[in-house]
Image (cartoon, rainbow, N blue to C red; front, side, top):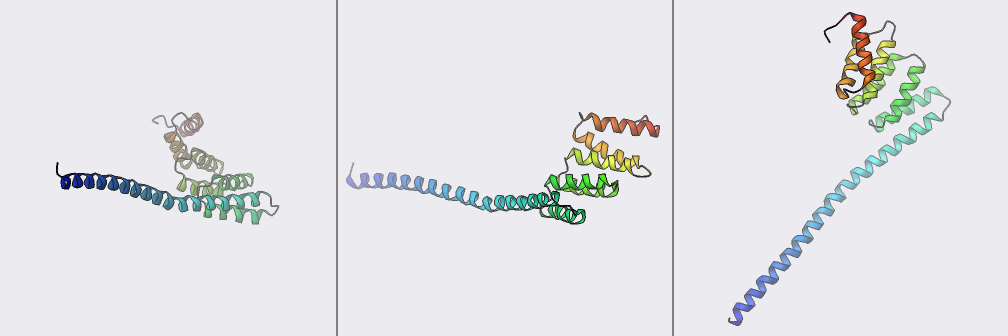
Length: 171
């Protein structure tokens, strides 16, 4: 083989090695870029959750119900998927027999967490606790809970009770 041919072959081989290394480097840079791009979103979500948690923690230590409610609603605005704020709001309104607000609380939660079975059950119970009860409205939410989890015996029981009381045997 002539020297020129050997030099060309070696330079091609070196070129392929450099390209492979550059490709690896580019892939590493791209992966790092993707990870770094996702990191601020994750940090922002963690920060948002921490703010909502701090508001809930402050609210449950307060003795002024009006101010505590403001903090809890604010927590649901800051992090709409943070369940603790909704739970405390629901407990407060339920303890005051303010079932219309119990419905509002859990309707907001299911907007952000549509598979949250407990929210559907709580809405159904709130409709049943209203004076007069609204069983047909409650039935919609018990059915939704049962649709999400067909093994949920509580949803099945409440649906059966409402259907029996209404005389409906079709469902």
